Image (cartoon, rainbow, N blue to C red; front, side, top):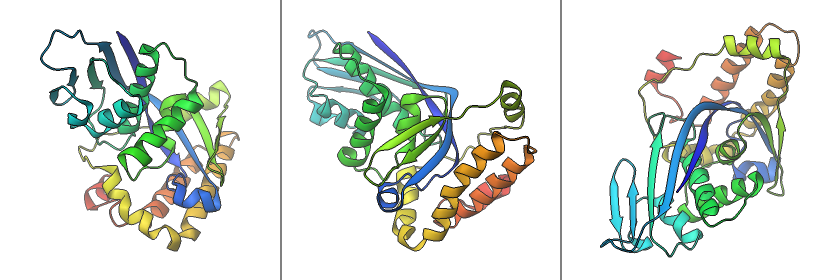
Length: 267
Protein backbone atom coordinates (compact mmCIF):
# COMPACT_ATOMS: atom_id res chain seq x y z
CA UNK A 1 0.00 0.00 0.00
CA UNK A 2 1.15 3.53 -0.79
CA UNK A 3 -0.13 6.49 1.27
CA UNK A 4 0.52 10.06 0.11
CA UNK A 5 -0.05 13.24 2.14
CA UNK A 6 -0.47 16.34 -0.05
CA UNK A 7 -0.99 19.90 1.28
CA UNK A 8 -3.59 22.45 0.28
CA UNK A 9 -2.59 26.09 -0.15
CA UNK A 10 -3.37 29.73 0.55
CA UNK A 11 -2.74 32.19 -2.27
CA UNK A 12 -1.87 35.77 -1.29
CA UNK A 13 -1.15 37.60 -4.55
CA UNK A 14 -1.13 37.00 -8.28
CA UNK A 15 -4.03 34.57 -8.57
CA UNK A 16 -5.42 34.99 -12.08
CA UNK A 17 -2.02 35.50 -13.69
CA UNK A 18 -1.35 31.74 -13.44
CA UNK A 19 -3.76 30.89 -16.29
CA UNK A 20 -2.14 30.06 -19.64
CA UNK A 21 -4.50 32.44 -21.45
CA UNK A 22 -2.75 35.25 -19.56
CA UNK A 23 0.82 34.23 -18.81
CA UNK A 24 1.61 32.88 -22.28
CA UNK A 25 1.15 36.45 -23.50
CA UNK A 26 2.24 38.48 -20.48
CA UNK A 27 4.00 36.27 -17.95
CA UNK A 28 2.64 35.87 -14.44
CA UNK A 29 3.51 35.22 -10.83
CA UNK A 30 1.85 34.15 -7.58
CA UNK A 31 2.82 34.38 -3.93
CA UNK A 32 1.37 31.40 -2.08
CA UNK A 33 2.02 28.98 0.73
CA UNK A 34 1.12 25.40 1.49
CA UNK A 35 -0.52 24.96 4.91
CA UNK A 36 -0.75 22.19 7.48
CA UNK A 37 -4.02 20.80 6.14
CA UNK A 38 -3.78 17.83 3.82
CA UNK A 39 -5.30 15.48 1.28
CA UNK A 40 -4.61 11.81 2.08
CA UNK A 41 -4.57 9.34 -0.79
CA UNK A 42 -3.89 5.63 -0.43
CA UNK A 43 -3.69 3.05 -3.20
CA UNK A 44 -3.05 -0.66 -3.12
CA UNK A 45 -3.31 -3.52 -5.59
CA UNK A 46 -6.74 -5.11 -5.40
CA UNK A 47 -6.58 -8.92 -5.62
CA UNK A 48 -8.55 -10.42 -8.49
CA UNK A 49 -11.02 -12.25 -6.22
CA UNK A 50 -13.75 -9.63 -6.41
CA UNK A 51 -16.54 -9.09 -8.88
CA UNK A 52 -15.11 -5.62 -9.55
CA UNK A 53 -11.61 -4.65 -10.65
CA UNK A 54 -11.34 -1.22 -8.99
CA UNK A 55 -12.80 0.05 -5.72
CA UNK A 56 -12.78 3.82 -5.11
CA UNK A 57 -13.72 5.20 -1.71
CA UNK A 58 -14.21 8.96 -1.35
CA UNK A 59 -17.49 10.76 -0.58
CA UNK A 60 -18.98 7.93 -2.63
CA UNK A 61 -18.01 4.31 -3.18
CA UNK A 62 -17.46 3.09 -6.71
CA UNK A 63 -16.97 -0.57 -7.62
CA UNK A 64 -16.17 -0.82 -11.32
CA UNK A 65 -14.72 -3.31 -13.76
CA UNK A 66 -13.34 -0.84 -16.31
CA UNK A 67 -11.62 2.53 -16.02
CA UNK A 68 -14.15 4.06 -18.42
CA UNK A 69 -16.91 3.25 -15.91
CA UNK A 70 -15.36 5.47 -13.20
CA UNK A 71 -17.59 8.45 -12.41
CA UNK A 72 -14.99 10.54 -10.57
CA UNK A 73 -13.43 12.58 -13.42
CA UNK A 74 -10.02 13.07 -11.81
CA UNK A 75 -9.62 9.39 -10.91
CA UNK A 76 -10.82 8.28 -14.33
CA UNK A 77 -8.42 10.55 -16.24
CA UNK A 78 -5.45 9.83 -13.97
CA UNK A 79 -6.04 6.08 -14.36
CA UNK A 80 -6.22 6.52 -18.13
CA UNK A 81 -3.09 8.67 -18.15
CA UNK A 82 -1.20 6.13 -16.03
CA UNK A 83 -2.56 3.26 -18.16
CA UNK A 84 -3.85 1.42 -15.11
CA UNK A 85 -4.66 -2.16 -15.99
CA UNK A 86 -4.47 -4.15 -12.75
CA UNK A 87 -7.06 -3.73 -10.02
CA UNK A 88 -6.63 -0.89 -7.52
CA UNK A 89 -8.34 0.08 -4.31
CA UNK A 90 -8.20 3.83 -3.63
CA UNK A 91 -9.10 5.75 -0.48
CA UNK A 92 -9.37 9.55 -0.42
CA UNK A 93 -9.65 11.66 2.75
CA UNK A 94 -9.20 15.37 3.43
CA UNK A 95 -8.68 17.52 6.51
CA UNK A 96 -11.03 20.16 5.07
CA UNK A 97 -14.34 20.12 3.20
CA UNK A 98 -14.12 19.94 -0.57
CA UNK A 99 -14.67 23.10 -2.64
CA UNK A 100 -13.46 25.39 0.14
CA UNK A 101 -11.18 27.40 -2.18
CA UNK A 102 -7.79 26.04 -1.08
CA UNK A 103 -6.87 24.00 -4.15
CA UNK A 104 -7.93 20.62 -2.76
CA UNK A 105 -8.91 19.23 -6.17
CA UNK A 106 -5.43 19.84 -7.55
CA UNK A 107 -3.87 18.46 -4.37
CA UNK A 108 -5.84 15.27 -4.91
CA UNK A 109 -4.62 14.93 -8.51
CA UNK A 110 -1.02 15.52 -7.41
CA UNK A 111 -1.35 12.96 -4.61
CA UNK A 112 -2.97 10.33 -6.82
CA UNK A 113 -0.34 10.66 -9.54
CA UNK A 114 2.42 10.49 -6.95
CA UNK A 115 0.87 7.42 -5.34
CA UNK A 116 0.50 5.54 -8.63
CA UNK A 117 4.02 6.37 -9.75
CA UNK A 118 5.30 5.14 -6.38
CA UNK A 119 3.26 1.94 -6.56
CA UNK A 120 4.83 1.33 -9.97
CA UNK A 121 8.29 1.80 -8.47
CA UNK A 122 8.83 5.05 -10.39
CA UNK A 123 10.51 8.11 -8.92
CA UNK A 124 9.07 11.43 -10.11
CA UNK A 125 10.50 14.85 -9.29
CA UNK A 126 8.39 17.80 -8.15
CA UNK A 127 8.55 19.67 -11.44
CA UNK A 128 7.39 16.69 -13.49
CA UNK A 129 4.68 15.92 -10.93
CA UNK A 130 3.46 19.51 -11.27
CA UNK A 131 3.45 19.32 -15.07
CA UNK A 132 1.62 15.99 -15.17
CA UNK A 133 -1.03 17.29 -12.75
CA UNK A 134 -1.56 20.45 -14.79
CA UNK A 135 -1.88 18.34 -17.95
CA UNK A 136 -4.46 16.05 -16.35
CA UNK A 137 -6.62 18.89 -15.04
CA UNK A 138 -6.39 21.31 -17.95
CA UNK A 139 -6.10 19.00 -20.95
CA UNK A 140 -7.64 15.66 -19.97
CA UNK A 141 -10.40 16.67 -17.56
CA UNK A 142 -10.89 20.05 -19.26
CA UNK A 143 -11.15 22.03 -16.01
CA UNK A 144 -10.87 25.83 -15.99
CA UNK A 145 -7.98 25.86 -13.55
CA UNK A 146 -4.70 27.74 -13.32
CA UNK A 147 -1.27 26.32 -12.58
CA UNK A 148 -0.43 27.48 -9.06
CA UNK A 149 -2.42 24.86 -7.11
CA UNK A 150 -0.67 21.85 -8.63
CA UNK A 151 2.76 23.41 -8.16
CA UNK A 152 2.14 24.34 -4.53
CA UNK A 153 0.81 20.86 -3.77
CA UNK A 154 3.84 19.21 -5.39
CA UNK A 155 6.49 21.47 -3.83
CA UNK A 156 4.97 22.63 -0.52
CA UNK A 157 6.48 25.57 1.35
CA UNK A 158 6.09 29.34 0.97
CA UNK A 159 6.97 30.33 -2.58
CA UNK A 160 6.89 32.84 -5.36
CA UNK A 161 6.10 31.02 -8.59
CA UNK A 162 6.93 32.76 -11.87
CA UNK A 163 5.09 31.73 -15.04
CA UNK A 164 6.87 32.33 -18.33
CA UNK A 165 5.49 32.95 -21.80
CA UNK A 166 6.98 29.70 -23.11
CA UNK A 167 4.81 27.76 -20.64
CA UNK A 168 7.59 27.01 -18.16
CA UNK A 169 7.69 28.10 -14.53
CA UNK A 170 10.29 28.91 -11.88
CA UNK A 171 9.78 28.53 -8.15
CA UNK A 172 11.62 30.76 -5.65
CA UNK A 173 11.20 29.93 -1.95
CA UNK A 174 10.38 32.99 0.18
CA UNK A 175 13.09 33.41 2.81
CA UNK A 176 12.42 35.38 6.00
CA UNK A 177 14.26 35.82 9.25
CA UNK A 178 12.77 33.61 11.99
CA UNK A 179 11.51 36.62 13.98
CA UNK A 180 9.90 38.14 10.87
CA UNK A 181 8.31 34.82 9.96
CA UNK A 182 6.89 34.50 13.47
CA UNK A 183 5.53 38.04 13.23
CA UNK A 184 3.92 37.17 9.90
CA UNK A 185 2.33 34.03 11.36
CA UNK A 186 0.94 36.01 14.28
CA UNK A 187 -0.95 38.26 11.86
CA UNK A 188 -2.63 35.45 9.91
CA UNK A 189 -6.12 34.11 10.62
CA UNK A 190 -8.00 31.66 8.43
CA UNK A 191 -11.75 31.06 8.74
CA UNK A 192 -14.08 28.55 7.14
CA UNK A 193 -17.09 30.45 5.84
CA UNK A 194 -19.18 27.39 5.08
CA UNK A 195 -19.48 28.60 1.47
CA UNK A 196 -18.51 25.90 -1.02
CA UNK A 197 -18.13 26.44 -4.77
CA UNK A 198 -16.69 24.71 -7.81
CA UNK A 199 -13.74 26.86 -8.84
CA UNK A 200 -13.84 25.74 -12.47
CA UNK A 201 -17.37 27.13 -12.79
CA UNK A 202 -16.61 30.38 -10.98
CA UNK A 203 -13.64 31.20 -13.18
CA UNK A 204 -15.44 30.88 -16.55
CA UNK A 205 -16.44 34.55 -16.56
CA UNK A 206 -12.96 35.56 -15.35
CA UNK A 207 -11.30 33.83 -18.30
CA UNK A 208 -13.74 35.44 -20.72
CA UNK A 209 -12.91 38.85 -19.24
CA UNK A 210 -9.13 38.34 -19.20
CA UNK A 211 -8.37 40.24 -22.44
CA UNK A 212 -10.29 43.23 -21.07
CA UNK A 213 -8.63 43.17 -17.62
CA UNK A 214 -5.00 43.70 -18.55
CA UNK A 215 -4.58 46.69 -16.22
CA UNK A 216 -5.95 44.79 -13.22
CA UNK A 217 -3.94 41.65 -13.92
CA UNK A 218 -0.71 43.57 -14.42
CA UNK A 219 -1.31 45.30 -11.09
CA UNK A 220 -1.95 41.94 -9.43
CA UNK A 221 1.28 40.62 -10.93
CA UNK A 222 3.19 43.58 -9.49
CA UNK A 223 1.67 42.98 -6.04
CA UNK A 224 3.62 39.71 -5.79
CA UNK A 225 6.91 41.61 -5.72
CA UNK A 226 5.47 44.27 -3.41
CA UNK A 227 4.32 41.61 -0.97
CA UNK A 228 7.73 39.92 -0.92
CA UNK A 229 9.41 43.29 -0.39
CA UNK A 230 7.19 44.01 2.62
CA UNK A 231 7.96 40.63 4.19
CA UNK A 232 11.68 41.11 3.63
CA UNK A 233 11.75 44.60 5.19
CA UNK A 234 11.04 46.14 8.57
CA UNK A 235 7.75 47.63 7.35
CA UNK A 236 4.72 47.21 9.64
CA UNK A 237 2.93 43.97 8.87
CA UNK A 238 -0.23 46.02 8.43
CA UNK A 239 1.23 47.08 5.05
CA UNK A 240 0.92 43.48 3.90
CA UNK A 241 -2.71 43.50 5.01
CA UNK A 242 -3.43 46.70 3.12
CA UNK A 243 -1.92 45.17 0.01
CA UNK A 244 -4.08 42.08 0.48
CA UNK A 245 -7.15 44.30 0.58
CA UNK A 246 -6.05 46.04 -2.61
CA UNK A 247 -5.44 42.69 -4.25
CA UNK A 248 -8.87 41.40 -3.23
CA UNK A 249 -10.55 44.44 -4.78
CA UNK A 250 -8.63 43.87 -8.01
CA UNK A 251 -9.46 40.16 -7.94
CA UNK A 252 -13.18 40.83 -7.55
CA UNK A 253 -13.13 43.09 -10.59
CA UNK A 254 -12.22 40.13 -12.81
CA UNK A 255 -15.61 38.45 -12.44
CA UNK A 256 -18.96 38.95 -10.72
CA UNK A 257 -18.78 35.33 -9.49
CA UNK A 258 -15.53 35.60 -7.52
CA UNK A 259 -17.34 37.15 -4.57
CA UNK A 260 -20.89 37.60 -3.34
CA UNK A 261 -22.60 39.60 -0.55
CA UNK A 262 -22.05 36.76 1.95
CA UNK A 263 -18.31 36.71 1.39
CA UNK A 264 -18.00 40.50 1.31
CA UNK A 265 -19.87 40.75 4.62
CA UNK A 266 -17.43 38.31 6.21
CA UNK A 267 -14.44 40.01 4.61
